[in-house]
Length: 242
Picture 1 (cartoon, rainbow, N blue to C red):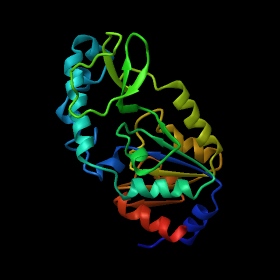
Picture 2: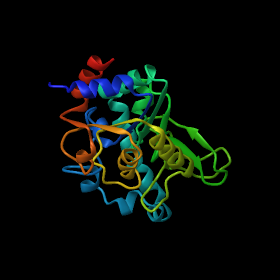
Picture 3: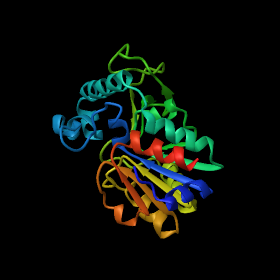
Picture 4: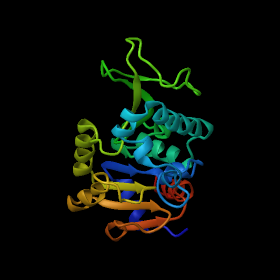
């Protein structure tokens, strides 16, 4: 694979790195993406399993959907792209990984400074107390699950028609504003407000390096785009840049 020397130089010299990842990086681990051909939303109606209205109508159905996704995540594992991003973080003084994924593969691969824009399917939230805890039981012992206080627990993820966590969004834009390099991996750049981040970084002087299967709406902003499986391209680029 041909790698421009300028790309290697930018990766070596970057002082503050921000990374944006999406479903594509985890698809290489075997997870089905939500959008696209044969995606989850072609098989399920999000209005019935991933909205506040669906939860109010039938929390058991919502939980059954999320339980199936939890099982799928548990059956797979992080891939070389996840591990390479963790390696880049270890070599960087200032590194922030912003992900739209809820599978926790980045943390499982060793990433530390991770901003989860859409939550984490392994966390549950008490509807009464608002407390958040981790539950990695697969299968869960009870559906729907309940808190010790007696209130029902919901998945700590962001559903359709819900706002992103304010702190996560604020920190994501701060990291994007301050970075001098943004690496975009496995995301189609169509879901807002996350889709705004690469353009925001570019407007504030950051270089963009993209790793995606095919061109995206921000490809024209990238100093270089590597098209192909990120689990193959990203490790090769980092190996030559480090």
